[in-house]
Length: 413
Image (cartoon, rainbow, N blue to C red; front, side, top):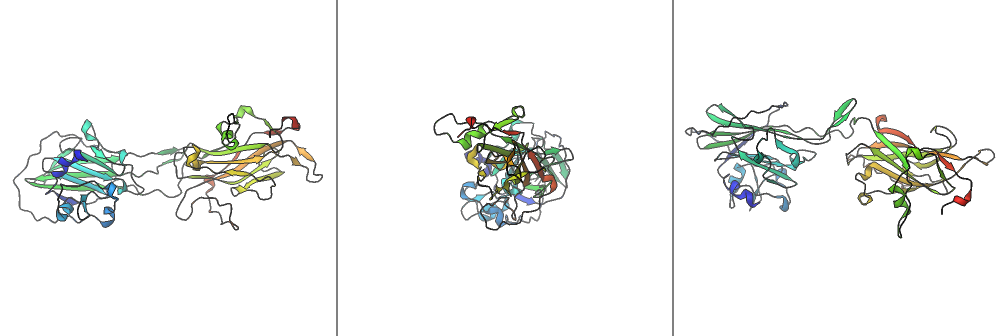
């Protein structure tokens, strides 16, 4: 990053002291547009900061950002809290605060400074009034800030002979608001940092790094909304695939009842509404049909069991796989399958008696973990026991009325 070279060359000889404290409040700093005044140096015993932990220094070559001037030694690199690989001094996967002798803050925030990883584009100073208070450079893995110690909402104070400049940095995060609480699944932190000047002595101090602990694998997420709808799209061009075109449009509530003939495909989609978490998975525990709107009524006929085609059906239901090529923003929030229209018959006489069908699906929202991938396996001889799902994560959805047409003159093939 050529734009940063002049700045980084000023960092040699800087002493960085790091510490962590457990404050959890937000404070709005006030501006003190003062020029730093340097006092006569005093003799002090300095303890060099420890080298960056080894795990913080494991980066791909393409991710390494130079820290310090070319030719820096390993001791000089460690003095400014950076990593050294034998020939290059670079920033580690942490939060690094440096202070230059000409009165500049340099703050480098790594994506992997928190877990889950932080969105570095969401990081900003708490009071970024000036245009130059945003990041001066960065990548998807790092955000780099550089600004004068007298700007961007920095506060000024004196502490045992030191002139102390202090600032505050935070990250934004998405909050889901429900009727009984709010949650977030994003990492964020608050960073309180200082530059301390005494004559020619410069110290950088991290007072607070306050990452939010990672969320639970299953958390109360407000009310879930799931919708079952039937596709009505048709192929109108050569080479079109029926299973793709059918889901290009759907019946609305005003279209019901709709009519089908025996063995005509019924294209079913079940989707999760109002969620933007790409990790959660919508699963179908069971889908079945009844002859009236009551899902508990009889007769019933299974379409899917544990998300898989009911094996005793001669015309097996077809599950349509969905992935990134489906064009859906969140493919794991959807399930699609195709069933063939049928008629219920009398259990005693085996004569057709019901000309209406309602489709129902019992759904479950799954949160992947190390122990559970949420994947529904349909080809095992013996299926694993299902993981217990909280009742709040289960919903039942149903279709409108589908009428069986008796005349074969309308049958689609």
